[in-house]
Amino acid sequence: MDKSNSLCEIKVINRQPLVDKFKSYRRHPGSFLLLLLVLIAALLTVATLLFLVGYVLITGIPNLKPSLFAWEYNSENVSMVPAIINTIEMVIMALLAAVPLGVGAAIYLVEYAKKGNKIVGIVRLTAETLTGIPSIVYGLFGMLFFVTALGWRNSMLAGAMTLAIMVLPTVMRTTEEALLSVPDSYREGSFGLGAGKLRTVFQIVLPASIPGILSGVILAIGRIVGETAALIYTSGTVAGLAGVMDSGRTLAIHMYVLSNEGLHKNEANATAVILLLIVLGINAVSGKLAKKLEAPEA
Image (cartoon, rainbow, N blue to C red; front, side):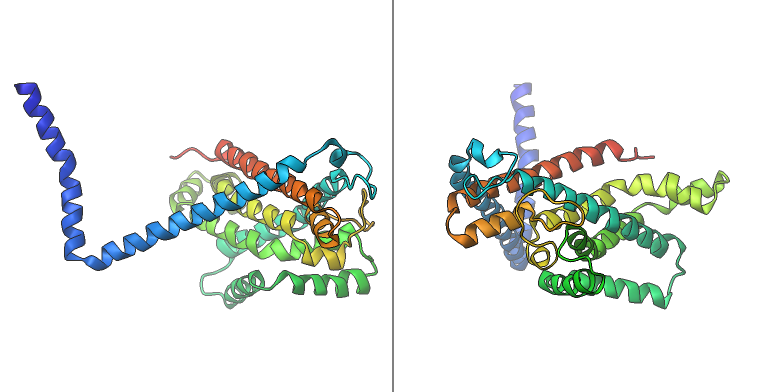
């Protein structure tokens, strides 16, 4: 009898929060409506993502074949291996230019700039404005400046520098938010132990903000990998392996060219699968790296 009574009491206790929530929703129907809208939005987002991923996999996986992974590209096998290598090269060059500048600018804005500085406000407004500029505008700027004015022609370097400018605001803003999320007690403790400003920033603040910085880098990589419009004007669409000063196509441009020609629709669908897997793989590796590098809580 005692055990049965205790179980009944537990059930009553567990149901009580649900009853209280229901009563609160009856008193405030607007809260229930907002909750319903949020749930519907979340379900639609998840359903859209699953639909897109499922559609790409269903239409692309049956078209994967060994000829698509040949080392050399030709009009018969339309191999994607040169485009994959070019994509990796493009990502590395763009990140080497954008990440140091973005992280350095964020460190200055958060750690060194005085509060209320007008320059800080101008830089932040400029970064937010650059984030919303269409990629085709970046492509036109890259063509006029890097390709024409500097004489780099259509090349991987011109495309990488254009993409570096494109992702620089994203890297800077996410790094700034990551630095601001580090508690001031970390800095105060470091200063109390006699560490200087520079040592505090690079040995205390930056390690604690690495997960946030990596999330910005992940966003930058995703935009670089999926970009087409800006690269068509700067790096070109030449198939095959490309050097730094050679014209070449990335995987996204390769897929666009195949689908635009209308002769290799199946191969374009297969390329979409590889592109999706590359992005998912980059996100998974970056997430694990962020967890390993995350500073332990004090």
